[in-house]
Length: 99
Image (cartoon, rainbow, N blue to C red; front, side, top):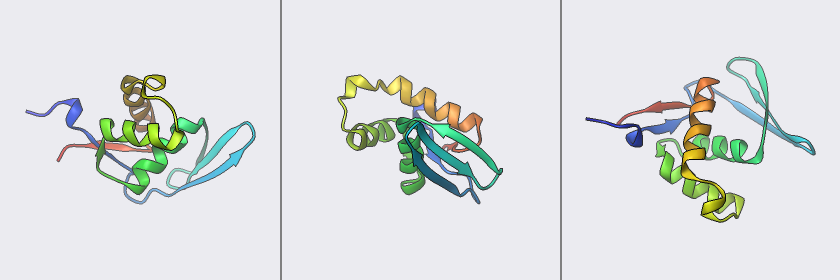
């Protein structure tokens, strides 16, 4: 039996994300659907991690975010990362899968 903790994350096949950093935030163009999104640093880094290392689970993505953002672990609860990944999935920017 699998649980949500077993979900691995990846960028959908055929997806191409283009990022541009502005003073007010990070704009990301979703080439697959032709949509644009304004992201905060955490969301942009999470997408970059999933794109560069497909197949990581939420715990590992959380760990990578802590390193990349140079913050304390208690500043970014793992539950917040889990919620973020599901929101990105709702936008079809990432996909969860079981191995």
